[in-house]
Amino acid sequence: MNLEEILIINKALSNVTRMHIINWLKTPEKHFPPHPDLGHFNDGVCGQFIKDKTNLSQPTISSYLATLQKAGLLIPTRHGKWTYFKRNEKKINEYVQALNTTL
Image 1 (spheres, rainbow, N blue to C red):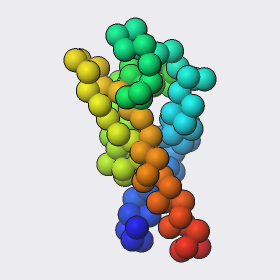
Image 2: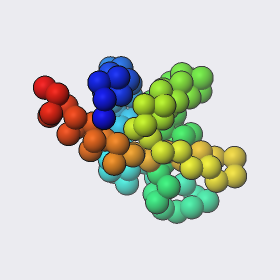
Image 3: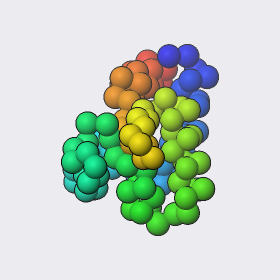
Image 4: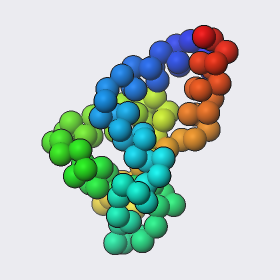
């Protein structure tokens, strides 16, 4: 991972709500109900459930999720009209390793 990628992720994580989202998605079953259509968290958490938990507007939460996705920290999966988000553990581990190497 190069320095530019590290900085993009740093910027994505520089917001308390975005940090909460990444943390909540680490153990989604503790923070969210499974979506009734799926009944599991294999593809992550429904964006609507994330919005509801944050109490933020739809445009704001969409922007936050897009920022985390563009940084490579979230993997979106579409099921019908719903988008589910889960952590990109590979990218998160690469980021942590890059920080350890760089710092």
